[in-house]
Length: 273
Image 1 (cartoon, one colour):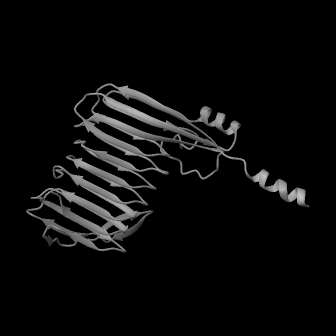
Image 2 (cartoon, rainbow, N blue to C red):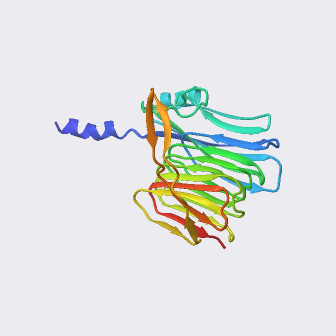
Image 3 (cartoon, rainbow, N blue to C red):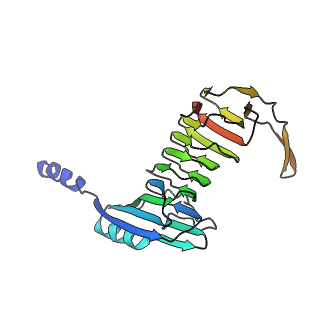
């Protein structure tokens, strides 16, 4: 009996394997950058050059040597430029391989995880689309083009914005600081986490705000806008009426729509310095 008890810890102490490598690559000048990964973080910084400069840290964690070799075989980092788009894409069996190629949401456990953490330098006027899902954060600074930012389990931290676009996350804080107020429709959405938005003085916009468990604070004075009429649509031959869940407010003389939606969120509309 003592022998069996002494062996049990040894059977449970098998440690996961881990391998790391750094991948560096430059892509030629393009108008748009797309980064689509599943595990890991993305940091993008604007600079005065013309190329997209990528440094990717790849971390492979596996339960066994066989799983490590399987990860090397099944997961691939694709880096290419097509037309006006520089594209960085992590492919693997966790993708749905449907038209948009996004994460399938598959829950089946594998004996490995391949994580990529990206550090990117891009031309300052570039448009960007960034997406990650697990164990990741997204940070961007000094990029003036339009943006589409999608995260699931992590924060979004943006500064020096001069474009318009959308930001979505689920479990994370959203922070965005504008160097120039947006000129087009812009939206920010999260479920669990505060939303802090910093705009330049003189902001003129129409806000649509919604939070279920939280408060809304604004440095800017705004006047209430009338509630939008109930929208009618047809689903499976039945008429469905949908009320607008957002409160409307006009800042200054009004302007582009800024939509802010947080379920368990404090929403703060702040004046940057």
